[in-house]
Length: 326
Image 1 (tube, rainbow, N blue to C red):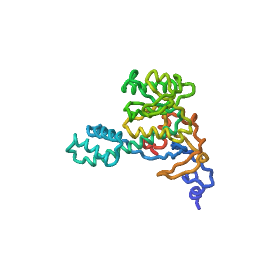
Image 2: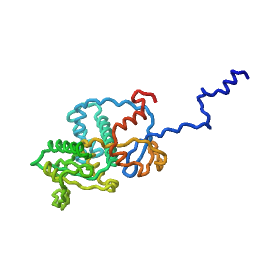
Image 3: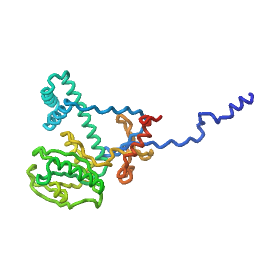
Image 4: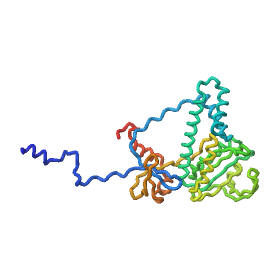
């Protein structure tokens, strides 16, 4: 064996394959996306993947606007299945009698609308379960104080100011009472300790809508500004049982109203997890991990969570989306 061959055998400095008995650098702790399903914290691992570009929104045409109006009216009347399709088709043919494939158009729009509704409900449920709430509120306007337009605008403005100045958080939906058609607002509210405005007083009176006596907890600040209101205290156990949440979701499905959110309510959070923080894994289209209840802290991980963090994690998990290499 000559000197050149001996050097090639003994000099392993440029060898790209490390020996198995040499110490290897520790694997980097992975990032996970974490949400709450109402009973447990669930995590899915962030993986590098190529994200398809989101298509630009197309301008809505007259036929789309008419469909949305007819679909909303049909849902409020409780129509489903063939009755829903027949109602929409009859209304569409009045203005578009020569449309070539009306049945296909209606079927596609119904499928898309129901898929979007499912996504809205899923987002609403995850936000409600992940965050903390201490009141279920109802606001109704009085005719001598507001009308529908000012009530909708001023209530949202008022809640927005309370969020900015006092740290309130809220999410809910405007809805019309089935008996009277009167507009009111149902929502979840988080009021930090010491940041409540007005005085809450328990009142008992007769409800003409329900036909019985009822007890409400009225805030005098909102009563003077808007009218009747009810601040019902919520416990953590009540939220876990989901009755309040299901009550709100029922309204979301009946109308085309947009859901009202305050800023800073995360749908999920991103953070690193160790193996000892995971209880077990399960398969639900993708691999999901159930976490121990004390892994996530409201004060540490959720209350002051900044949305920019999810963008940073997205950059780590999906670099191709930003023109970077994996």
